[in-house]
Length: 130
Image (cartoon, rainbow, N blue to C red; front, top):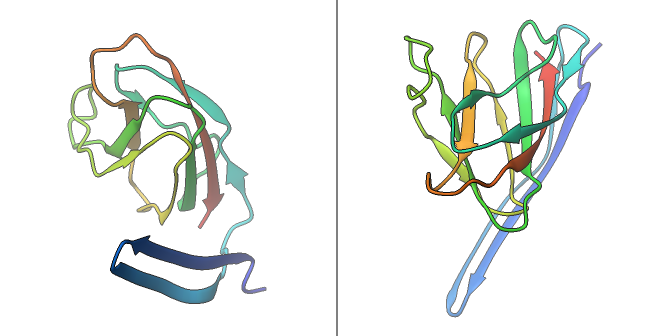
């Protein structure tokens, strides 16, 4: 089979006299192995691994911050694999979404941004097998 994963992409910026669009349209991707993982996971200011469930080889990852107030930082774990070793490469504000392909051996971590709150933030996670 082919084209099991379909992404419809469109982004627009309008801010005063500044305008831009990114619209590659529909992208179809073949899923080599059937599988999906993820769920809703709680995060605090202490780093934690983003749980992919039973996924063996991650493909596309969709993240959504379900909080109304706090942001979540996320990124790959460094080679040491210990807390405090996340390389922050993204931040999701309240309600924001990120969709990206995950490297086959990547381990992602997340934490509430800011570091001075006791907030617990829920992250909606969907990961599809490559």
